[in-house]
Length: 368
Ligand SMILES: *[C@@H]1O[C@H](CO)[C@@H](O)[C@H](O)[C@H]1NC(C)=O
Ligand SMILES: *[C@@H]1O[C@H](CO)[C@@H](O)[C@H](O)[C@H]1NC(C)=O
Ligand SMILES: *[C@@H]1O[C@H](CO)[C@@H](O)[C@H](O)[C@H]1NC(C)=O
Ligand SMILES: *[C@@H]1O[C@H](CO)[C@@H](O)[C@H](O)[C@H]1NC(C)=O
Ligand SMILES: *[C@@H]1O[C@H](CO)[C@@H](O)[C@H](O)[C@H]1NC(C)=O
Ligand SMILES: *[C@@H]1O[C@H](CO)[C@@H](O)[C@H](O)[C@H]1NC(C)=O
Ligand SMILES: *[C@@H]1O[C@H](CO)[C@@H](O)[C@H](O)[C@H]1NC(C)=O
Image (cartoon, rainbow, N blue to C red):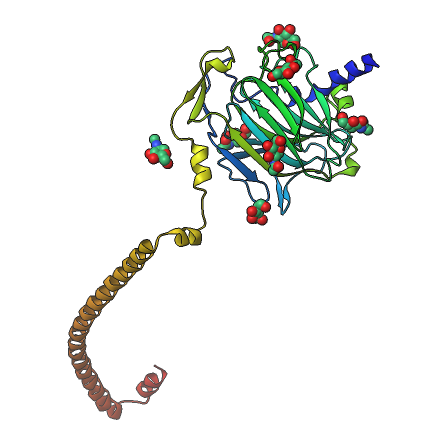
């Protein structure tokens, strides 16, 4: 029984590291640009289109419904990944979600840093009454003993509150207001702090198949076997995610390659994400409504002034045209007189020849 427990515990954490084999820039290996800070607290509702300056759907697309955003796998080869463009340097992530069901289907919402510290919620699609917690430090996958399982009834049908609390001393996982797990900074599991998650993390939400060829046997078993694609679609729904950053500033920058929280510099200034949240983009009519009355009057006056200018310009144009009209009329008179004279001359010529010539000329005239 104990052996079985350890076997299962070993299987538990297979996945996370699989999806996280790399980040765009690992600060323990090279110099990376600083991480943009969230620097505030905000609840993102997933029933409306996410702001793509704050979130990036790097794989697949979301379907927005009144109860939240659906992540759906329709066929083999699909996988979905959403990540925040902002980072938190210790804080809280509160996820309200419904897991996807199906053997080999993994729903996940995690915090992950550029040097592969990680704090996970994962739902294995073959078990709809549970959720798994896990963590990694600096991408260390030497052992697979950090995962744990927790109860969550009808996790595929009901939204539960899955909250991660993370500070310099402790890491906690809460389900619907109950703390189900705590890991301390310094204990055996964290290699006494060395592998405790402690660098700025972004939020990542994913839905992916573990039960496909190419995955390791351990991962396939952990995920409940091979995916039966005839059961597709497989859908996870996120209703909302509240994210709170315990640090505040513009950016978080690694200083050196220790990966310790002592090495993270908080660069002061205004957070772009915080500014964006405080001043979201608006539609044109909302912008108009939001303008103070004085601005409305200003715009009306401006429009009236512009209108007046147009009236004046049109007036001047007409005056000019009338003057030119008179001139042209005079010219026309002259031309008319000339033409009339020519015509009269011609007619006179014609009349004179008509009488003296043949009817050919007359026919020719008719044909003209
Ligand atoms: C999304 O849900 C929130 C909270 O219930 C609500 O305030 C908001 O109006 C909803 N948005 C849409 C587009 O339904
Ligand atoms: C979104 O993610 C893709 C893939 O990682 C990346 O190429 C792109 O630059 C990201 N966009 C933003 C706005 O960060
Ligand atoms: C599902 O997970 C819960 C929580 O870990 C566990 O108690 C339960 O036995 C699991 N059910 C099955 C069928 O494995
Ligand atoms: C990785 O973890 C193992 C055990 O969990 C530990 O013995 C080892 O020192 C760690 N390696 C690093 C580089 O942190
Ligand atoms: C979700 O759970 C956390 C941790 O217990 C709690 O602080 C938070 O208020 C809960 N959220 C809601 C909406 O109840
Ligand atoms: C973590 O610290 C708390 C006190 O803050 C203690 O009660 C608990 O036993 C510690 N856990 C471990 C695994 O050391
Ligand atoms: C930061 O934001 C505050 C308040 O919105 C503003 O007064 C200040 O000018 C901003 N600073 C910079 C450097 O943009």
